[in-house]
Amino acid sequence: MPTDRFPLLQGDNDRIALIDGERRVTYGALSGLADRLATGLLDGMEDLAEERIAFFLPASPDYVAVMHGVWRAGGIAVPLNVGATIAELDHYLRCARVTRLVAQAKHHAMLGALCAQLGIRLLQPDELMADAAGVLPDIADSRRAMMVFTSGTTSKPKGVVTTHGNIRAQITVLLEAWGWSDSDRIPLFLPLHHVHGIINVLSCALWAGATVHLFPRFDAAAICNNVAAGDYSVFMAVPTIYVKLLDHLERLEGAEAKRVCDGFAAMRLNVSGSAACPVPLFEQWQARTGQILLERYGMTEIGMALSNPYLGERRAGHVGQPLPGVEVRLYGEDEQPITEAGQPGEIRIKGPNVFLEYWDNAEATVKSFRDGWFCTGDMAVVEEGSYRIMGRTSIDIIKSGGYKLSALEIEAALLAHPAVAEVAVIGVEDATWGEKIVAFVVPRPGRKADAEEIIDWSAGQLSIYKIPRLIHFVDSLPRNAMGKVTKPDLKALLSTTSA
Image (tube, rainbow, N blue to C red; front, side):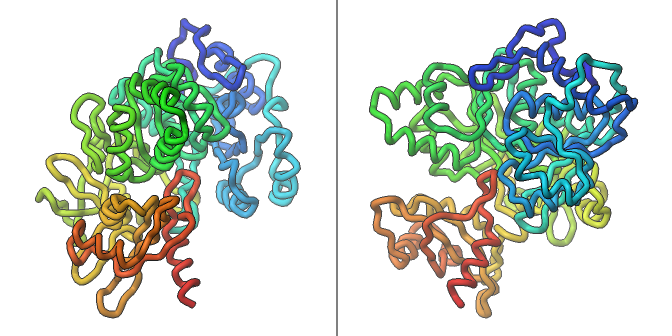
C-alpha cells in the first residue's frame, strides 16, 4: 500500500495502534518502525522488486513492522504459520522461493538447519532496523504485495498472491460495510497467516486508526476479563472460539459470568467466520450475550465477498448478500448461471478483491477462472435474498440416492441432539447410494451417546434421505489452524478403523 496510507490518521501519531502486554505502540512509532525496517531491507537498493521476504512471527509489533516494511520496500510479504511443522515450512519456503526469513531469536535454533539447506538468510527484526528511515520507492497498486498459503484441505497448499490494490479493496469494503472507526478497540488472537486475522482484524483496524490488543494465542480467561472491563467494541472469531467462550462462561460464577456477558452485549459488533457457524451456536450466543453474530463468507483468494448486514436482519445459517463492488453468481453443473431462487450452484466471484495468481502455478490459476469469474469451489443457495453456504463441492456436497445434499445442513441438525457436542459429516462411496452419509460425533461430557438413538432421533429432524447411515464416536475432530474440520483426515480415519 502507498506509504501515505499508513497510518490513515496522519496528524494523530499519538493514538495507540497496538497493545502488546504492558507495551503501548502509537501510530507514529509504528510507522517509524516500518519505515526503518523497509530501509534496512533495502540496504542501499532502490526497490526490493518483489523479493519474497517470509516472516515467522507471532502477533507483535515486530510482525506489523516487518509486514509493512516489506510492503513499503517493494517486496512480497510471506507470513508463515508459527504453528507449522518443519515439513510444512519447507514447502512454503521452497514454493515461494524465499530469500530471507525474519524470526525472533528464540526460533532461530528450530529454523536454522532448514534455512541453511535452502540457502535462505535467517534474520531477527532488530538486525533489519536502520538507524533512520531512508528514501522508499513508490509502490503502484498493481504490484504484488503478499503471498498467503491456502489451508490445503483439498490439495497441497498453494501460494495465493494478492496485489496492493487487492488488499486495499479487501480492507476498504469492510471499513464501510462493518462501520469501522478510529474509536474501535479489538482483540487479535487469530492466526496471522490467514486473511481473517491479517485483513479483517489487523489491517482493517490499522487502516481505520483503531486499537488492536495483541494476544499470542487465544486465552479465554484473559480475554473475558478484558471484555468484562469494557475494553473492546468489536470482536471477531471462528465458531470454535465462540464454543470455547460459552464453555468458559459455564464455569464462571453467576456474577462474574454476567459481567462478561454484559461486556459482550455492550460491543457494537460480533463477527463469526472462517467456518460455518451452526445455527444452535448462533442462537446460544444470542441468548447468552444478546449479540446477533454477523456471519460472512470469504476465502484466501478473495478476502470477503458476502456479508450479513451491519444494520439490518442477520439470518442464522446465512452469510448475507454481496459486499459493495463484489459481483457474485451461482453456476450450475451445466456451466450456466442459476437464475431461479432456491437452486444450488457454485459460487463465482468478480471484483477488485480477487487475487492475482497462484504463485508459480499458471495451470492452477487458469483452472480457477471461467470467463473472468473466480470459481470458489463452494456451493450455495439463495433463500429470501440471502446466501446460505452448502459446503465445498468436493467435500461437503454428498451425492446420495440421486440427491445433492449439504453436509453442513446435516451437521447443523445433529448438533441439536443433547448428546452431541461436535459433529462432522462426510460422504463415503457406496455401491447402492453412490455415497452414504457418515457422521463423526464428539459426545457431550457426561452425556451417554448411542448411535442407533441418534439415527432414530434424526428421523424427526431430517428428510429420510439426509439421515446418516453410520455414526462414529471420536474424542475430537481434526481441525486446521482456523478451526475448520479437515474432512480428508476423517476419510482416512474411517478407512483405518475399517481395515
